[in-house]
Image (cartoon, rainbow, N blue to C red; front, side, top):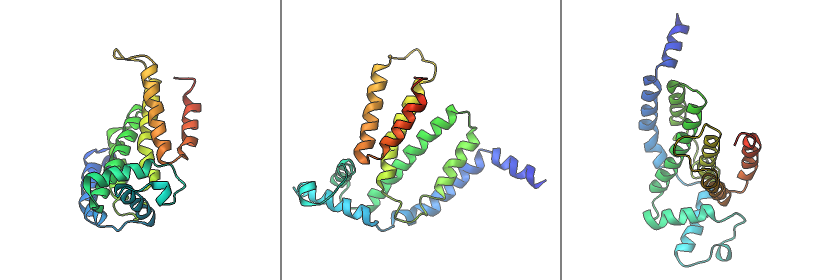
Length: 202
């Protein structure tokens, strides 16, 4: 009997929707008040150096591409030194990543309930996780990388009436991968894997 109850709850889309809401209500206040981890503190110093007229690689040592620093500098220029604003941007990036994953899951045939369970799982994980996970380059690079994956997988699907040919989607995909590499070059390994898996279907 309990198996059938659990099975029916799993298939009900309103259960994960409700749990997602509960997770956000409980987790967001703590998430927005979390202190910055050492990585974000370093890049925040770089952003403030740039805003003060300094030069990133000259005035502050770094061995990484400047994409994350430039993004953080833009956020600081618009919202100021508030870490709450930075965490909201970080949360927005995570939501964008989830929406892209949801698109891929929908194309793969996942049910609405199964897709909403992913949102519920993240709602009970990300806001409650340690501050060392928040505002990380690995997360931020995933947004353009997954957008490129969605665009590439979409090109393997039957073309629609608005299909504009291969040039513009290919150009946009390349720009998205470049943005991801600009944040963290390790994403090139994933880009190569995606290309190899889809090259015969595109």
